[in-house]
Every structure is written in C-alpha cells, then in structure tokens.
Image (cartoon, rainbow, N blue to C red):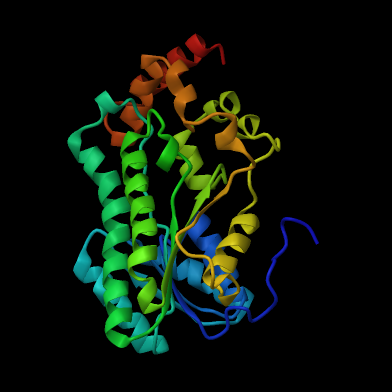
Length: 308
C-alpha cells in the first residue's frame, strides 16, 4: 500500500450519484474514475461529447458501473438544468456535485483581452455557481441532503501574477464554498473545497508550460516534498470528502500540495523571467494566428534569452 493506491474500502460510494464537471479529461477523469470504482453512479460533463464517451467507456471497463455522459457548457444555466434532469431520470437522484470544470491562460494581464478574461471567469466562477445554484435548489425543493465539492487552488487566497482571471474566479468559488456551508447546512447540504498544488496533466500543463519551459520551471522544484502529486492522491481526498465518512466536515478548503504554497505564495510568479518574445510566441499559439515560422522564431529567440 502506498500513495498511488486507493484509500477507501470498496463500495464506499455505492448508491451515490455524483456529477463531475470537466469529467472527461485530467483531474476530473481521475476523480470520477475512482468514484466509479467505489460503486458510485457517475455523471461526467464537458462540451466535447466524443471525449466524454471515450472516457465513459474506459471507466465502465474498469469499474463495471454505469456512467452517464452529458454534453454541457457550464456557462449556460439551461444546459446545467438539463444535465441534472438527465441524471435524475437515469439514476433517480443526485447526491454529490463536484465543480471541477476550469479554464486558464498564462499571460501578462495587460496582454489579455476582456473576452479572454471573461472566458476564464465564466467557466470557473459562473460555471460553478450555475451548477451549485441549480443543484442546491433541486435538493432543497426535494428535501434531499447533498454534498458540494469545489476544486479551487492555493492562489485563491494567496493570489498569483500571470493567472489573474483564474485567481479572481477561484477566489469567488472559495467564498461561495464557505458561505453556502453556513447558509445551506440547515438543509443537510455540505460544501467543501480542495486546493490542489501541481498535479500535472498532459493537456493542461503542455498548454501552460510549453516546450522547454517545463524543464526551466519544473513544478517539483517548488514543492518541499520534492515531487508533484499523483492523481490517485487527489482522488483519495475527493472520495473521502464526498463520502459519509466526512459528514462532519463542512466549509473547509483542504490543501494538497506537498507544502508548495507555504514555500512560496503565487504559483506562477516565477514567470517574471519570461521575455516578451516568448510571450509573443505563446500568445500567437493560443490564438492560432500568425505563421508557424514566426512563432518558432519568437519562441527560440525567447529561449536564448532564458539560456535554455
């Protein structure tokens, strides 16, 4: 038994129906997969139904339990309500909401358009409160207890340069978590959050730190424990917090980062060292505009300045 092993006993979540937003890839997929292994009825959402279906097939193959795919843009309240309706029609009830869907840009704030800022805030904050409000209303009307688990980040309270839209949005989600923990406790609804440190995922970290930047800014170097997190460690914590074992935990945010934020607040503050040429290349790649040749020239010019 080690940190890459499942923590809870089999069937710890049997009979519970859990909605995971952003459940098709990355951390959402890892947490949802473990929930299913523990007996939960799983509902995964994202905007890409093909990705969801592939993930659902993989999870079913491992757990043998049913998984419902529901395409949904969390920014649209009517789509959120539809997912909840489909989940109830399929499984009879929903017990847990995991707000995991997120978006982020690494960029100097002055380089962002207001639309880019809106995109991150709308997915992270609006998406979380859309699902929370719709699910909470349903539970209260049905006189059913429920559990909300939100994925935030340590810079929700520490702040961080170069990810300002995300920091703003995650701070809002954290405030919502703590506020509703008090307000909705009388209905039997618990609200908690997890603040993960670096748990690299193939897609997200490749976008955030492309090319040799992953070597230059190796996230493990900032962690006192000397390593990044394993997805199973996060899944273990999430499963505990949505299970009945944690029924007296309410309004908490639990940090799982190996001590990273204590070592140095502001997860992306080190990006001060990135030269303008590299920001230009990264921005051009994000917008998918400009020529590949120019992008490569800007990128390698920036690398030379960083001596990579």
